[in-house]
Image (cartoon, rainbow, N blue to C red; front, side):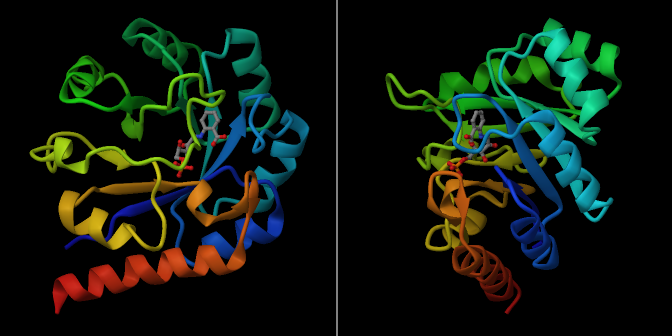
Length: 220
Ligand SMILES: O=C(O)c1ccccc1NCC(=O)[C@H](O)[C@H](O)COP(=O)(O)O
């Protein structure tokens, strides 16, 4: 089985960035959403992205951001990619790509099979898609809620589109997620934290160890 690409989201300091990259993260995500405990200001993100220094792809995660905010992020922080984690339409994704010339990851909230149907319209429009769990009613955050969805819904997705499986992944369940979905990408945030917005070295190591173990078991 091919090793899935791994994206660690919601990073806020150099030590956690260095650790996840050393352990093999392919993408590191920075949250630009004021209500999130993982939010980073643009100047802070610029420093962190400079610190990454090309060792992993850097992703700016935004939620229904307007052009002014995207411009501030793109030119201020200089991420490699934009993640659109709100209710951005196909047209909005096309506009963002045309205006800012950055690859786009479009996120979707998934609970039922119908939630996946709408994502088809974005094929060939978004560069990658990310399937996250639908937040609970009344949740403040559209992502980073640490909840899973029914991975069986992804049956048949294996080859059709490069996607990240996201939502509630952690060291305990990532092996099962890999086996059940064969996802080409995995995305995790709160599963490697000890408190909202606080990444934990032990949990980061446990997560990467669990991924390695699952892949070894597959090839054995
Ligand atoms: O993580 C946040 O606080 C967040 C806030 C607003 C929009 C998106 C956000 N996270 C985006 C991600 O890509 C997370 O990694 C994804 O939702 C999975 O989070 P988790 O279930 O905690 O692993």
